Amino acid sequence: MEQHGQQRGDHGYGYDSRFLRVIAVIDDAVRDAEGGRLHLVENRLKHLLVNIIEHARAEYDAMRGTNYPDTAEHEEDHVRICKAIAGLCRRWSGTTDTLHDLYDLRSIVFRHIGTHDHALGEHLMGMVSSSVVRCTLVPQTGP
Image: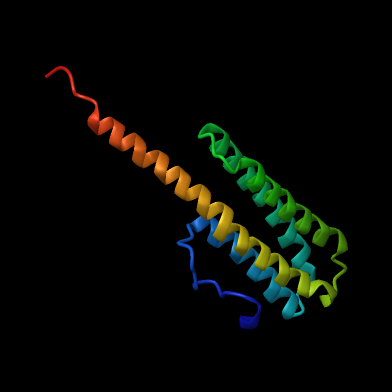
């Protein structure tokens, strides 16, 4: 599998545990498909889709709440990922014919995490840093 992207544990973007879980589910689906445990792959994909939708909703709330400038582009990428997973769920026929699609999905998710989620994280950290600076500059009143 090494030729198909980064292994779990080789993190170039400072992933948090949420990202690791998403990649882990994809990796588990790939391993199941490669190992002939095809009956497990569809369930993993359905579980992944539910979790990606929940992740997208939480991120959308954060983006909307902080006036994130790239909300539309980020959301479009979430939709693209969800459609890719839903398509895999529909096409999964218990064969390894769609194994390359699992590799592609992993690459798409890695790209999303490394670009859109990384940029959103930087934006949110900037918001936190700005709030901390403003709080420390406000004179304290009282005892």
